[in-house]
Length: 308
Image (cartoon, rainbow, N blue to C red; front, side, top):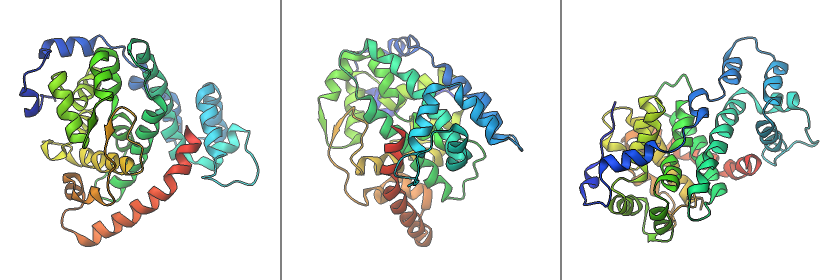
């Protein structure tokens, strides 16, 4: 489904829509978005796969191997002895977390190639922490709803929701430098400033970039509408999950490093359109979700420290 600019993009802008698209289309394509480590993903999903088979594929990727060992030896798992063997790490981590690692690692590393065109040093670690944290929380939030998901879309929408920021570093480096130095009251004001300066905000820029990679509408719509899930005409639950997860990460103080926004107050996510879309007026479902989120926020820092 083609993604159209929001009404806020009607403000007079320095770039035409054609020029914005041309610049986005000039950005490098990411091979990882096409494959998402297909060989490993297929093996993990196959019945009867042995840990030794999975470990063998992981060993071919030094970066993934290092990240996996770093995570299994983090305080999150609290193991009494250090794990140095990939096969043992597979056993302790479990298939779901390995699949998440196998998706995140190549995407984040390829995005680093956008740095050379940026006029300022980009806060990569802050971005990766925010992106992976949002991915983990989006998956856990959507798991608490009635939405049935049989693939990794719930993780990917959170992982990729801010890809537009990285595209801006390549396609609009001067504008990004100004935006990164400009204080804003919240993410809504950030989007307004981006639209006034460029013509599109980072959500629309990211969605168009991902469309060029032929990613599914579930992902591109969620990325486009993650600051305004009520505007999504389809796949609204994915956009809502990302909005709530993004707000939760900002509450922890991890905003992604690309903007200067005020701290998010406790329970601010309960006022979001996304929360209402996910849980409606069901007080019991909302109460269960709040308890689950509180538990996730307690576990998240040690998990992220192991990943990054």
